[in-house]
Image (cartoon, rainbow, N blue to C red; front, side):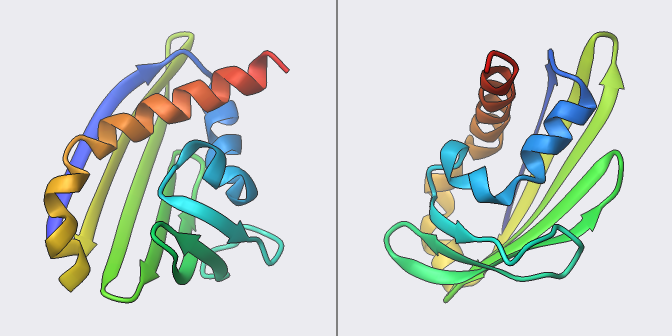
Length: 136
């Protein structure tokens, strides 16, 4: 098992960040591990989405919690499971965002060093995606 977490203040509203996090169709736009995701419609907890991840592994993605200030996710492919948590709290003109995740499985053990710093990268990509949506 491996775990990571990172925290940042992102100059976006919690509502905008929540919109990005709950738009599973667009997840591959800002998370390069995902090649595709098939949205069955809706983000209610436990609804499975089909995913394809690099290097071509198939699995499932689901939201397990979608509260106002916390969104939990779970995705898995053969040999790898990620449990993720996003905390989004208002902070001044922006949001304090904490992202943490835990990996389990034999493939996760092999890839542990490749995931160092990924929590920070995901926060950067979340901020970039939200900013891009603001300008469109």
